[in-house]
Amino acid sequence: MTLFATAPVISHAQEQVATRVRRLELTGGVAALSLRDEAASPLRYDGAAPLLQLGYTLLHERSRFSLRGGVAYGSLTAATSSGGLPSEADVHGWIEADYLRSLGTGTERWRWAVGGTAAFRLAVRNHSYANPIGTALWYSFASLSLAPAVALERPFGDRRALAASLAIPLVALVSRPYSDVQVFRYGVPVRAVLVGRLQALDLGVRYATPVAPRADLVLGYRLVVERLRDLEPYRWASQSVWVAVSFRREGARSGEAP
Amino acid sequence: MRRLVALTLGLLSAGCADLLVGPNAATDPPAMFEQVWRDVDRHYSFFQIKDVNWDSLHTVYGGRVGPAASPAYLASTLGSLLIALKDYHATLWTPFGVWQYRGPVGRTWVFNEGVVRDRYVTDWSTPPYGNLRFGHLAPDIGYIWIPTFDGSSFGPDMDLALARLSDVRALVVDVRDNGGGSNRNALDVASRFVTGEHVYAYMRFRSGPAHGDFTAPHAELVHWAGALYTGRAIVLANRGTYSAAEMFVLMMRTVPGVTVVGDSTGGAGGNPLTRELPNGWTYRFSQTVISAPDGTTFEGTGLAPDLWVPGSYAALTEGVDLALDSALAVARRTSP
Image 1 (cartoon, chains in turn orange, purple):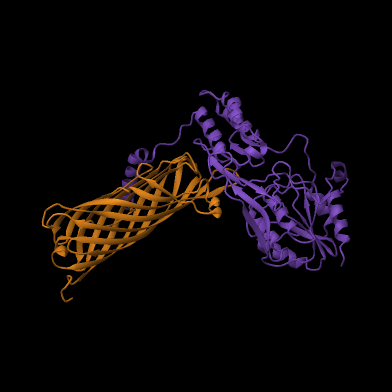
Image 2 (tube, rainbow over the protein chains, first blue to last red):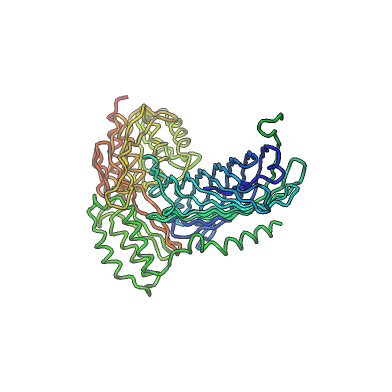
């Protein structure tokens, strides 16, 4: 599943007309995280996490391929926390790739695209308990998921555009220790889960506007939810607001001189 | 701008978190009893070895906890439930006290650091990180006392102690009353005595909801690191030697010529898993089964010494540490 993705959904109007465009996008933001991993605690943990992401996008006339990688770190606390304990130090990273194809002629005011997303995500968390001996244990959650994706874009000309995207994983490989991560010394268990077991979604909204001939400023919001129905359920949600600088480089259309 | 971002995130988080990940678990006494019972049921490692009827204990203790149970009463009941496991690692921490099994009634052990310091060791010293105490029992016999394996930087402390005890031909390593801590710290100490690499134990984790669901046995290894002590080593242990300290005894058993003197260890052969309740209380219990290289488990029984000298309060009152005297006798029999 995608995570904090700043992915544009459809190529911008002008880019779609004549050129192949490469984009390099650097994103910074902050996410409001909520976690309830019952392997570690029955309590809900909340907190903010700064995030960084680097993305590369290749836009063709009717399609777009995007690759992104990022990391976020936050310290989460529970309703019972006092003096910083109990707490969860949450580090997670992600690598995502998605491919979308435009529907329609490309000249509509509202433009649709459909495709799919593959995402790998790893979260490692150090849970510090509030007992007198200062116990801290490690927990983790990893997933590799495949999701159909749909996107909608409303270009305003001059490279300005408002876009939204939605991806819902249908199948995933999940790795989660039975208790804490010590058990991983005995092998990393991986299991396949379907949408009924892993209930997740990735919803994003972004607005891009040019700030220089080859650079756009992008503002966005993203909601990612991941719920694993398990013996000890896992529920995680991230709502992020972010800003990105997107550098574009135009290339020749296939078959033309650069 | 920062206030705006914080406000936005706060609104987003507060508005949706309950919807997205659910609220906190219920804090009524029956629900919290059920959580503890269920957690132990799914993760505790010694049901079969100890022949514990966990369902029966649910009936006995769960029936006592009604919705109107006071926090103090709930704490007492949960504490009793965990103590019924007869496991040193089964512990409940609450504002009303700590519940932990401390061995069968009548089991005692004797040790007094002051007697060792004042009557036996001539140059009682503490290394920079304070993890141990050391000195000379005789010009050619050294002594190191490790009160706990909690903390960090045991390796540097050991290297300094061994450098200062480089003139001895025998060394007594005392882990009496050492309640455990980190296996990593125990390894840092033991690695100063071993050459090569040795299996000192096997460990299995609970890996599923059935009481017999375990990972395959995994070999736990100790190997040399840091300063190497090659003289005769004697380990002192007693009934207060628990958990990581028992692992240390297992590690030292791989060293040729080591003699373990004193009493059997406490018998806490599990690695604990910690959990917390929705009201903030925490508890822990064993999630592994640790066995010696020959496959025997020592949960509840302890590791027997090579030379059994349990000691006595009467002698200790007179300033005589019988186990240490025996360790000295073993050391003196060591050829120079």
